[in-house]
Image (cartoon, rainbow, N blue to C red):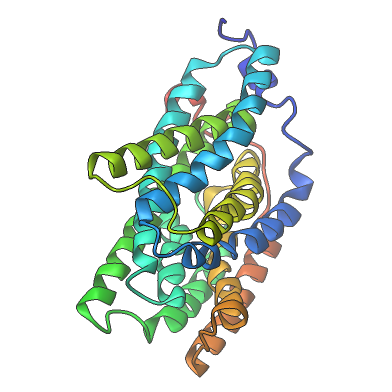
Length: 316
């Protein structure tokens, strides 16, 4: 197949409604991704590389047929595929590091650190001058920093093992920031199905091949672990991450990333209900602060189409 004559127009086909639904999409993504830590915890003691690899593999089985259909309709955009492959490698690092962190520290600390993505994205925007946050968003970012520090602060670094878990969560956060930046800079060239299909497939291969090379059995620890991993693919991945990826066509990475900041709140609440991890008073206070920050960001963050001032996909 050849490169489509009008890749920007073609990429928009089949990718859903316009920017007016970005706030609703981000709220939906927040609810969906809040289940991720719970499902991964329920899949233990499956090895983290295998858990993350199975999640992405299941998602890719669903997404790749949709990606092929989109390519048949619109043509093969090789640049999009190449950057989706890079995104898949970042996916592998994100999930592999984060799932490993969940084995070493609490859900609150791990999810708090791994979702600090918008803070890093805001710093990147300051240095690059691209997609700088609305000045008012800085208030939301500051409030979010207070909230996530309050949630995770009491759990951070209590033991050397917990400190390693914190470091792994930060590595996962940095990888996710890179994934969001790639999706945003592709702009209107971003085809949701092709990008997500290739990224999940590449991430799955990277994780499972690494596990195989290390001699780790490529199977879940139990039938219940397999069910949890399938659910992690269907809900946080296919619903949550696809909504985040779609929103990148219309909103700045910092605004999209702010939706993930609310994940510790949802994960903490689900941890109480499903895992019996009762939060401290500081965690509850942090959850309220964080939710306020997310609400502020969604109100202030204006979804916008890429303009001529934005870098074209050829400039990535």
